[in-house]
Image (cartoon, rainbow, N blue to C red; front, side, top):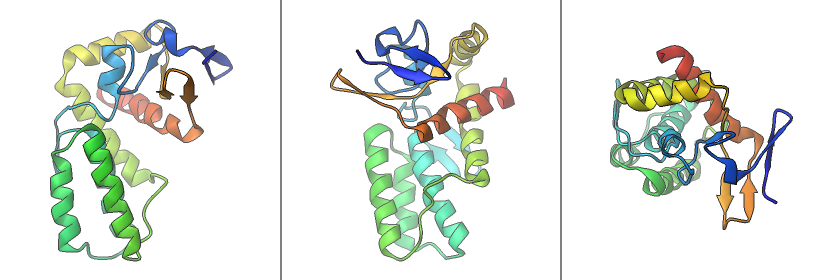
Length: 182
């Protein structure tokens, strides 16, 4: 049977929306799909307008890689990042991963573990997303207030659950955004 263990409790994917909310593009719930970085939710920040948090995620990883390295970003990467801003879902993920490989091949060490600057910027984007949809934010707050946890895991072919400790990063960002913008 498929299950995920978190904080000493077991959760079944079939109970997504009952015992927990899975922040995942294939969640059983509208709220879970909305919480996914893949969701099409326009976010306007000081460094641009993003069609999704997935685009923001990859954008920030690449920008932070150049900032940390103290290197100037090449024009072709800047232009590709501008395209990335307008993407959602798998398209944003694919371009972001491709750009990350290109950056690595140029000799820049890419940021794999988000740092405090990255987390602050991403959480800011998530707050904007939340504030842009008051109905969904109310739904999220009601869910959290009722004690239903937010989890993040993948279900593959209805027979495999993928959950790794670093996936909890998204849940932590959601919790930070809730505390900052509610």
